[in-house]
Structure formats: structure tokens, C-alpha cells
Image 1 (spheres, rainbow, N blue to C red):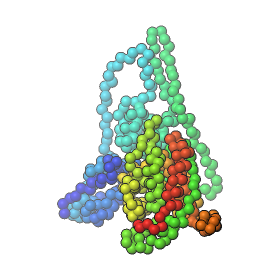
Image 2: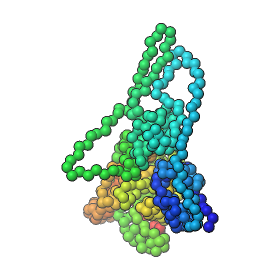
Image 3: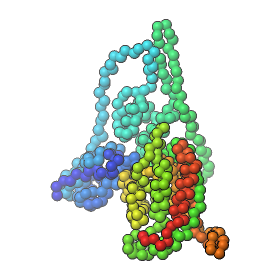
Image 4: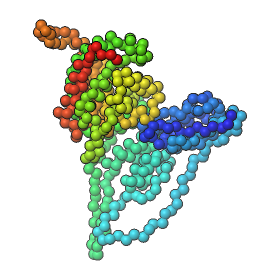
Length: 443
């Protein structure tokens, strides 16, 4: 067979590159078609690259830690008799010395000490890999290679991630500004301290029998994202109890015929999403994001659905343009994303672009929860367990006590832009749509 290039696949509109985190095959190994060859990571998700052909791994074109653009060849696959080539050597980065231009500084012109104009290499002085995004942020913020090397990286092999450098910036410490003195003046030094106070790391004492476990990469990302969200948004949570007896009865009636016709199991999740989407159309100001002192009102309604993974971690795949899908379409989208999430088959585009999120805490038997907003969104809803409860209902003959199916809805929202009136009316409207569900509707 002719030699075939294994290229970095397209992983969604918003992803242009990925970092190689590990090679699953070595040079000389026999590879089956569709067999995973290399693991890659983006800022959004980890995934595997399968072989597009059967044969032998002839050559690796990149090393672990290298950043590869979409469409670039990452390996060569050939016939079993082809001669193998060694793994590429680490590329040495040589930075030519740039002559410093002579600059005339006017009197009283502020000069910031500590800002750096150096071009950041892809490898730090200690040998850690630096992604293009991290290097770009560092150059923009005037962070030198040496300073970048002091940041405690949470990425693979201690590499500095986007979240690491963004979290570092507010606590960077003081910057010293020197004002150019005029004749016979003494230089004046002004210190500008960070607005955000530096939070010292808590010392956790160890006790006999304790076991220390390292967080995996996904857990570190989740931890960073949750802390960032609570730091960014003042969270407020409103609660409503909803009577979903009509929904329970309707689902019990149609689930078998739905399965036979659509070859899909219908759960409560797409029904909840349908009600939330309708409420977003009524209250579009919960479908927004905040950028400084600007509000971005989203045109699309892209529903994130928090999904628990077998590892215990959490991921939020997104149903794009959920308002354009009927209940059958929502059901298929929910099942597809949930199955691919549990089997590590999501691509980066599947978890990007969300404008509102729902999390089903009821699937674990929880009655209600206080969910954390999935930034840069401004609201999230937790749906609790459906329970049989005695309730007072109105009948033609007067009030009566009956057994009803009830659940709590917990709506957490960003109080910078969503006040209690809007947050409370929104969750009440979702409950209204659920309670008024038509038991005679077709699916």
C-alpha cells in the first residue's frame, strides 16, 4: 500500500489546534483501520485520533506536548514491509537577539517596570510546553518567560493552561511604575496593587491512614471552572415546586410506542428542556452573557445538559438551536449526546456554545440542588427527583387530598444582570409549562 498521512481531524468550528498528550502506538506497531493512534487535548475536551487506514506506524511527526494545527499530518502509516523511521527529535527554538532601538522618553512619561516585550518561546526555561494561546496572553499582558515559569501549571506534566494564566493575572502582585524625573527631581516610585487580595493556599494537615490522590486532568479543569464561576457571579437561587403528574402519566402511556416508532427511549430530560426553551422565549434576558459592563443577548438557544461520566467527573454537552427541535428531536439529541459523553466520543464542538444549562440532580435521588452557573452563561436550572406526594387539589366537588407527582426546580442566576423578579418569574414559567402539559398530545 502507498504510505498514508494521518492528519489532525477537524474538531468543530471553534477549534483550530490540539495538543498531543500521548501516543497510543509506537513506531513499528501494526494498526487496524479506525484504531486509536494518539490522544489529543484542546481547551475544551480530550479525545483520540483513529487511524484512517490499516498498516504499520512508519513515523511520528510530532512529540508529546506539541501543538498541531487542524489538517496537519501527525503520523505516516504504511505497509508492513515499509522501513520505520525514528520519532522526531525535539525542535530546538533559537531566538535571534533583537537590537534595542534607541528611544527618547519625554519628561514625566510613565514607564512600567516588569512589562516584557520578549517573544515567548513554546518551551519555558524549565522545559514546560507553552501553548500558543498561553504565549499570546503572556505577551499581551507583558509576562516574561521567567515569570511564566513561576506559575503553577495544572495541565499535563505541569504545563500552564489558559485557566492558570487567567487566574494568575488578578493576583500577579504589584507592578512598579517609575516616572521619568525632571531636572533636580528625585525619581518617584508608585506601586499599583492588585484589586483582588491574594488568597493564601490553605495548609491541610495529614492524619494517620490518609491517602493522597492526584486529581486527573478533567477534575482539575472542573475545579478551576467552578471556583472561577463563584468568583465571577454573585449567585442567587429561586425554588418552585411543580406538579408533574400529567407528564408522568403521559410518559408511562407512550414510552413503549415511542420506543417502537423512534427506536429511542424517552426520558423526562427532553420534556424539561422543552419547557425551559419555551420559558426562555418568554424571558430572553436569561439567555445572555456578560462582557465587562456590556450584555450580550444571545440569538440562539443552545441548551447545555450536565452529564455525569462513569469516572465520576462531569461534562456539559450542548444541544444547538434547541428551540428548533420538537420533542422527538430533543429526545434523540439528548440520548445521542449522553451516550457519546459516557463513551468519551464527544468532539470539542459538542461542548461549546451553550447559552443556558440544565442539570438533573433528581437522577441521583436528590430533591433539589444549588447549581453553579456554567460561565459565561448567567443562569442554570437544577431539576429534582419526582416524588409521589399528598397534595390538596381542587375538584368540582371541592378541595380533596390526592397523590400527585411533584418535583422542585432550582434556578440559580447571576445577580449582576438577573434580579429576583426575572429569576423568579422564569422558574415559575417553567413550572407552569410542566404543570399544563397536554396529556393527549402526540409525540
